[in-house]
Length: 248
Image 1 (cartoon, rainbow, N blue to C red):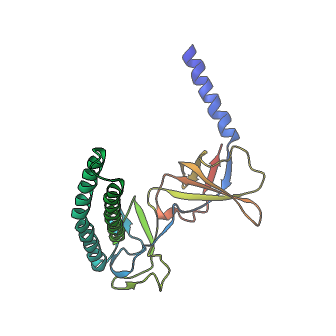
Image 2 (cartoon, rainbow, N blue to C red):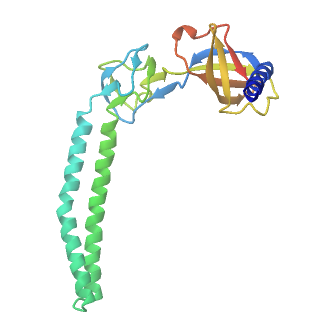
């Protein structure tokens, strides 16, 4: 008996939920569109063409980085060259501290040993920081996909020299290959429940896809643009005229 009552409750809840659901005509587009650039200059040695699919870890673009790699090696060598002086200064400081405790060394002599250590350690740390900066620059030589992506547009070609000083720092425009975006223009006022993160659905090509409210943007010309990301990827769905967003 209790099982029947529970099933009846579930059916009624589903029924009333369906009645209260609101449907809005929607436009389908790419989700999570990003423009990718790098803070380095160099010759493009590889770039994926528009329409290419990239898996996580795939290299989408490479820049010839011989100069940056040479700078990294130089910076690491300079930092390593400071290590003997740091180790010597540290030992002398520790010895000065010990002698000072035994009243063999004066305050001035102890402080001088401490200052020598501070100076040599600062020089080493500065060299290490420059080496880290060089390492970061080398890290931009190969741009890898962090998830499944679609290349919408490549703004450079293989063999082209890319310069930060002469071009807009955008190399690739990509979009998600695991999600798509549905947008609908609504009139105000909105229900208070229409907040980012709200579970939603997208009705499309005879199917219903699970989604989530990603953005609620109030337009200057009036109205509200509601965006829902949903778990699907099919380029044929772009600009589907029968798409609808369903919100409880």
